[in-house]
Length: 483
Image 1 (tube, rainbow, N blue to C red):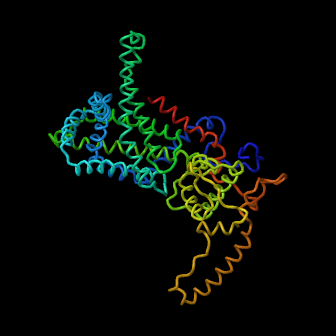
Image 2: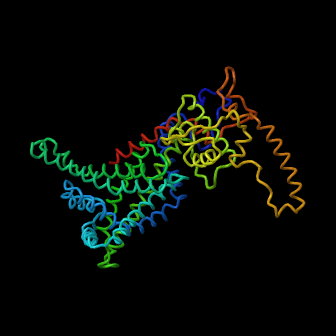
Image 3: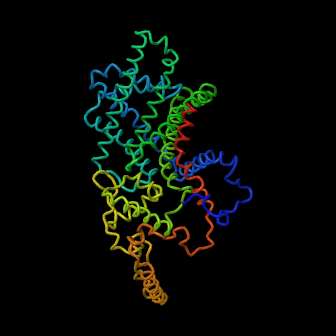
């Protein structure tokens, strides 16, 4: 058992000076400490993925694609008579709620540009669509990097996803505005508004929920890996909250510190818009990092690796994945990615590393519904075979140009002896290694390291594993309180 209270006092980890013991008031502060440590983990992830540079790249791409994207989206409204009258309302809503202070000026310029798109030729329209797709491909590639997606969707699947984003997003957006407008009008006609005046005046709730839903959909649809809906919802709420704070802060700066007008004069709108887009992408990428970090944190990851998996980690994580799929195979099914991550106790980063190698050597494969399946008989595979398939063995040959040297011949003999010893020591099949515990088998004391003392990370994981699982609830509580 992982509960440290069931261990004898002699085996309990020693308290270190300056570190509070998990008793009394320290227990109450553990969830908050876990939350702030999680934020530190997200920040480390953010800096490792160079999200500042990626936000700058997305800002430049967005500058080129903002007019084509809006032109294509508003063209969808023109194709549906029921939504055509909502075009101006939606356009005003976007610029009033998503671009503080300078929204009206930008709306005038962009409306002028969009009116000129009606005079484009077929080649110009094709360029318009390609520019929009270019922005979506940049967003998709960035999110795939954040989620450590090793594979990519085929070109047909990607185009279908992009087309769905371009076409369905404005339709759903217009439908939500139409429904909300109808409800408010109905409240005024029936007199219900007098009883629900405070509620109807809280019109900021609708943009907030629309933003949260849009961000959550972005985190689910764009990455090439399955994303848990709960994680996407938490990320969407976080992004929407940060976006609202950014709008308030940016509007405060533009209003009270108008130094940009002195420097840029009539061109002040351009740098303001660029800075706004850059900060907006920073918010989106930071929320995406948090969404991608949630399953890693639940899996026990607490530190960012600057290099790839260590050899022992890769072997242990591969065995954890095979063990989870072996247990699921008994019921005749497979496991979706987020279930597999939880069952194996690893994060998406480690899963991407071992899954690629296991899939290449036909240990696992994806089913028709995207679930992972165990497709190899583990009773016919030794631990030594798995060791080599993971790229950890000494099977690679010596480069021919080095064979003429005396030391290579000596090393070849050493390698042969090491290989023979490893084959003998690791001759157990993977199925035998992963078999269930037998009656009377003492798992807790079955180790040669009798003086083993758990590390700080393992102690922390044992003592706060349950608290780590409610981290998402803490995030929701914080967002609710903030909103």
